[in-house]
Image (cartoon, rainbow, N blue to C red; front, side, top):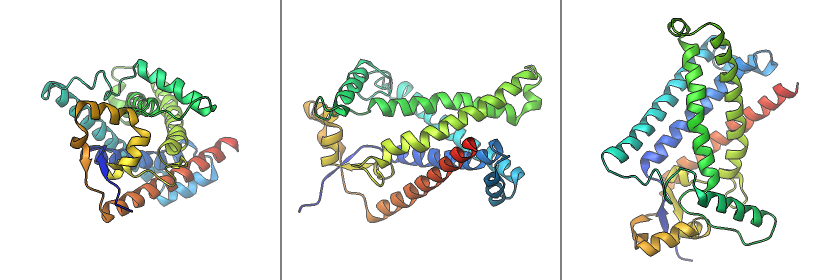
Length: 272
């Protein structure tokens, strides 16, 4: 059997950004949940692993800083594409993350496939659920990040806002973080890694590449569009090295294990 050919789906900046986002989010969840569920027995043991609740709080702020830096870097890259490169495709079209009418058509086609009424659909550059993931994180950065910064520097913000706002910020920060962790560790993990065709994990975000077979099956609309534009050769890529695959499996396994453990602890704390 000949070696499968590969196409480039993400560049190195995408991969590094996602890894930094993943690790900072895991760090925030692991250090924040013991504080949110401080009355749970497991919270004491987990906080001890970080050096106590105070140290867990310090690490939480560190991971929060990393996440903010990643977010700002992502926004800066988007601004550069628009201002410097004059690339307006980020606002509309098949390569945009902005929801558009085609996403509703894809959602409907996927639902029909779920109930066995039509063959499995293929998609373009981004699917409707990937856009949902993206904008959930984007929205969450303002809600969780904004309330977190407010709680981090209460003396400064108390000069401008009344004290009762901090109570709301504390509630919003914890509940929104809990919602984000639950979604990421269940829905996102399943869509990205635990689906039967991807199990035990999808390495494309870590290597930046996928086989042409996967590309044709999952992104048939994108392949047809690029073929019509004569741009298929532009995304051809060499296969990932053994080191890249090993690194992707290692960091992906780490994220899956930590995420699954945390979601079990969250459900245990809520139910008990």
